[in-house]
Amino acid sequence: MAESKSKDESGKIEELEAMSFESSLEELESLVERLERGHLTLDESLGIFERGMKLARICNLKLSKAEMKVQVLAEENGKIRTTNFIEE
Image (cartoon, rainbow, N blue to C red; front, side):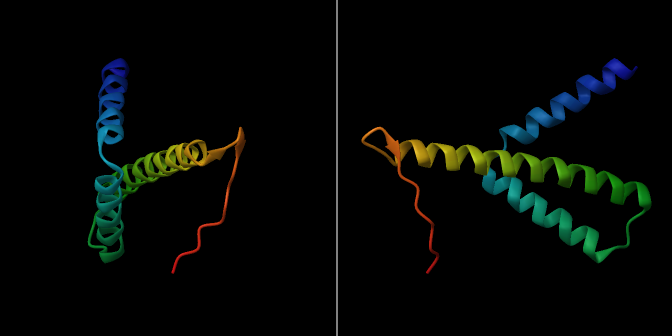
């Protein structure tokens, strides 16, 4: 039974990883809003929190990968040129 649950969990994680960054972030924001509104049972809150943490980790990983890709693309003369992003 534990093996079945483990396979189910890995399937859910793979499903989350397959989502686009934008979809993951949108769902994460939706989950935060649900938690902030309250009116959930403890079990519902824990389930939502757990899914939110998984989404947050996946979003963070996708951002880190994108940052590394940008650094590689910005490579100049064999050296990585990094600059601070200034939002206007």
